[in-house]
Structures are given as structure tokens and as C-alpha cells.
Length: 168
Image (cartoon, helix red, strand yellow):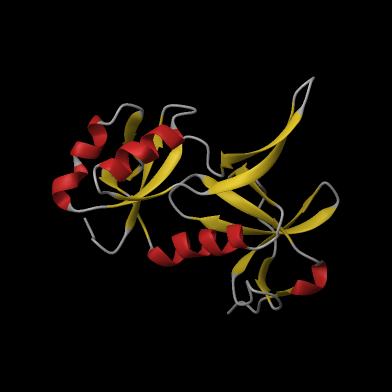
């Protein structure tokens, strides 16, 4: 385990906030990306904080905390690659935090999106990030991938904010 890396925990559905409270109580560094959403019921509307990645939470922990985290009610397992907990670089967690701080429309999609052109964001606070351009509901969106979570983020940007990258 690398102490500078984050790891993704897979959780039972709708237990993200409860698991976050338990992790914080144990002193484990945890990150649950939340996004404000307008929920509509028949009698009212309300803005609520919802997890960006349903059934996932990110942790940065020591070796001795590794197994104790698995005993928390709601935690199913670590997201693994080749039998080991898959590490997520700190820069990717920071990118998710940056995206959520901005006023962009973000939605999480499965990795089944067809691969398109590789583009670089050339304007705005996300300048320098590389992703893939796709057509989705008629809008051009940049896909910024978060490794090892089997999801991608779709960020809505004006088309003049991106340019095709030169591939060698």
C-alpha cells in the first residue's frame, strides 16, 4: 500500500454518508464527493447533497487501518486490480474536488461511452486537463476519466474551450 495514494471503497447502496461518519470517527482520511441536486416530489422541491459516485467513497489510510475499514457496516470491499486495492493518484482526487468547486454540470456515466477524439481543455480553471470528446444529447462534453472506479465524469464545456491534441 502506498501512503500517498487514495483507495476506493465499494459500499452498499445509499450508505455513503453513514460510512463517511464512521470513517471520520476512526480518524481515517476519507473523501465523499457530493453534488447539489434539485429533487422533486409531488408536494415539494428541495436541493439535496448527493454522492457523485454512488456506492463509492475514497480513503487514504495506513496499513494498520486497511483491514479495520472493512469491518464498517456498509463497506463491501476495496476496488481492486489484480487482487490488490487499486491506488488512485492524489492528483485525480484533487481534480474531482476542483470540478465540484466550479459551476460546471457534471454527471457520472458508465465506461460504455464510445471512445472519441482526445482533447485538451485550453480555457477556464480546468485548463490543461485531457479527456475525450463525445456527443451526448447534442452537447459536446469532455470526459475526464477517474481511474479504477469504472466510471467517468462528463463535464459540459463550450466547444471553444477544447482543442484536439496532437498524438505521436
